[in-house]
Amino acid sequence: MSILSDFLKEVDEGYTVIATSGRVVYANEFMVRRGIIKEEYEGKPYYECFRVLTLISAVAEGLSEKRRIATSFEHEEVEYQADVFPAGDGTLLRLTDITKFKRYERSKKEFVANVSHELKTPIAIIKSILETIIEEEKDEGKRRLLERALKRTEDLRNIVEDLLIITKLESGEEKLHKKMLNAKELVSVVFDMLREIAQNINVELINEVDENTKVYADEDKLNLLLLNLVDNAIKYNKEGGKVVVKARTEKGYVILEVSDTGIGIPKEHIPFIFERFYRVDRSRSRELGGTGLGLSIVKHIALSHGGKVEVESKEGEGSTFRVYLPQSI
Image 1: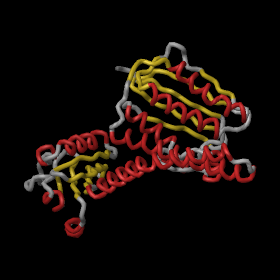
Image 2 (image 1 turned 90 degrees about the horizontal axis):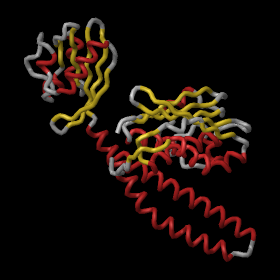
Image 3 (image 1 turned 180 degrees about the vertical axis):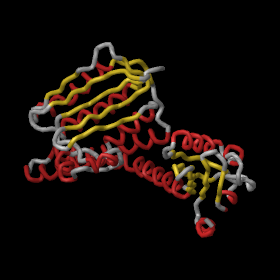
Image 4 (image 1 turned 90 degrees about the vertical axis):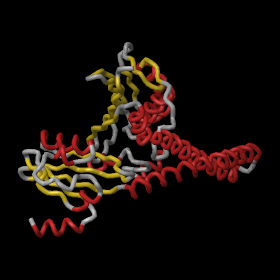
């Protein structure tokens, strides 16, 4: 233990070992120096030693359930990531200072938001100019080039608008106007918007939502969530395939389920599909269009409503996305 103790004195992370009895066996200098644990800790119950309530709760959960617990908290203007692990006959707590990382993340998001705002006006002006020139251009070859430029401008505008939506949802600036909505009617509206695209590749849209299913949500945001999920389900489907939307209530949640009979998602890609700009198949994504932000928007809309989104997929057989939204007002 002395060799390990010497090593842990030098590391820039906090470590604490807690016995199954709940008494603290060891804490390195990082924990004491940062004021996370009292200096006189050895042999005392962890709940008397830690100065942070979040850690007391995490360790209690880790000891009782014997599984990894991850949480984060702020103490004396420093942000920490805490991980509690089962370790032999006890529990190990690891603490990491994530202040710089969090500041970087906030700066990056602010930068993206600011740039997106600055780009909106010039993109709108370019789009307007191109539309005017196309209308007046008689040469077919030049007209095709200009139309291609207009399409790229519209793609850029869509990316900027999607980035602004995500930024507002992440920051909590986007105010939600929740009300009771008829889920079946919402799905019907989305199907009507996308029916022509589905018909072009012979994909059948099936609305199996019960007409009495109600969901408490922001209508515009839920419409956008469903639009992104159904649009993906159509685009990544097979010719002659199906897109089915269902809904059910379970343990205080309304669960909206969008399933397709498409190409599916390889298992190794599933953990990353809700990240911004993540593409499973870049060549197919370029061919089908889109901003690469759709699933990220879906995730943040669900989170902003106090819900979550999950996915099940099998490569070559299709995917099912489930959105959990709190049932109560």
